[in-house]
Length: 446
Image 1 (tube, rainbow, N blue to C red):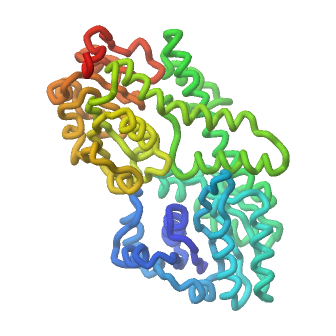
Image 2 (cartoon, rainbow, N blue to C red; image 1 turned 30 degrees about the vertical axis):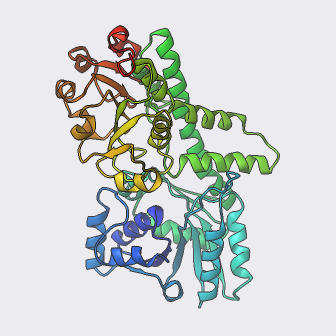
Image 3 (tube, one colour; image 1 turned 180 degrees about the vertical axis):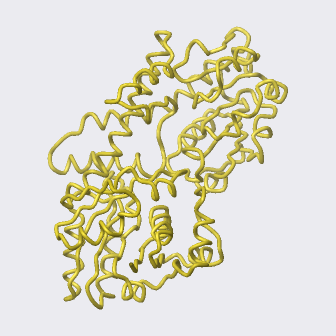
C-alpha cells in the first residue's frame, strides 16, 4: 500500500519506518525543514534503539522517503496517517490546532478516495471533527479511522513490529477491512470497534498504567514506614495474573510525553461532561509528589543543601531515550538550585535536550558517570541507565567527598550495599537503607 505519514515526530517517524519495513511505500512529512534535511542525510532526530538502521535499510530499498510537501504526498497515497502533536494546553486539554491544520491540508490536496487514519492521541469525538473539517473543504470521498499507538519510548520499534494488539476504530466496514489488511503482518490480535471507543481505549490504557505506577509508589512509601520491601511486595502482587508484574517498579514517578499529558487530558475530558475523575486526580498528585522524596532524603542525609555539591545520574525520564519531557530530574534539579546547591549532572544521551529546558552556572555537565560523581557530597540516581549499575560502589567511594547515595530507581542490590561504606537511601526498601545518620548528618553545614 502507499502511505503518507503527516508528522515525523516520535510516533509518526517510528510508525512510518515500520510500515515501510513491512513492504509498503511510505512518505514521512514534516514542516520542519531541518528535520527533513537530517533524515534525508541519514540522521535521526530522536534516539530510539534500532531506528537508524531501519531507516537506512528502507531508504536504500526505495520504500521510505521524507519531504515537506504535503499536497504531493497525499495525492499519491492510499492511506494518510495523522501523527502530529497534541500538546497540553494550560487547562490540561489537548491542543488540536496541529490536527486541524493537518486535516485541512489533506482536504485541500485530495484528488480521489483516501482513508484518513488518526494515530495522534486525541480526545473522544475528535475524529468526527476531523471528518467535518475535511468534508467542508472537499467533495472527494474519504474514510475516517482511529488507530491509536501503544509504543513505549526505548522499545518503540519492537513495540510497533510486535504489538500486544492493534485497535482499529471505524464506522465503515471497507475502512476496517483495508486497515486490518495493513496491520495483519504485525499481529492477529486486532480489535475493530467504533471510533469513539478506540479514542477512549488509548486514554484509558495510559491512565491505568499511570495508576499502577502511582499505586506502587504509595505502597513503597508505606513500606519505608513499616519495614517491608516493596520489590518483594511487587513481585508477590505481580504473580497474580489479574494484576501482572508490569509497571510495578517503585521509583520517583513517571514522566515523558504520554502519561503526564494523557492523564491531564482525560481529567479534562471527564470534566467537560460534568464528571470529576477523583482517582486519576490522585494519581497525578501522587506522581508529582513522589519525585520530591529525593529532596527530602537529601536533606535527611546532609542537613542542609545550601552549598552542597550533588551528583545527578540520569536526566531522561527513562532509559534508552533522549526524551526529557516532564522528566523527574527537571523538578529535582530545579529544587536543588533553589536550595543553593551545586550540581554535577550526567546522562548518556539526553544532556543536550535537557539543557534546552534547564541550564544554570551552578550545573556542571559531566561527560561520564564517574566525572559527575567526583567530589560530590551526595549522588542521586534518577534514571536507570544500565551503565550506572556497572559502576562499583568502592570506586564511587573513592571519587565522592562523602559516600551518600539516593537511589531513586532501586538499581543497587542488597549485597552491594552491605559490602560498601555508603549511606544508602532507596525507594520502599528500608532494610537496605545502610544508614549511619550520625556519621553523615550535616556534613555540609556541621
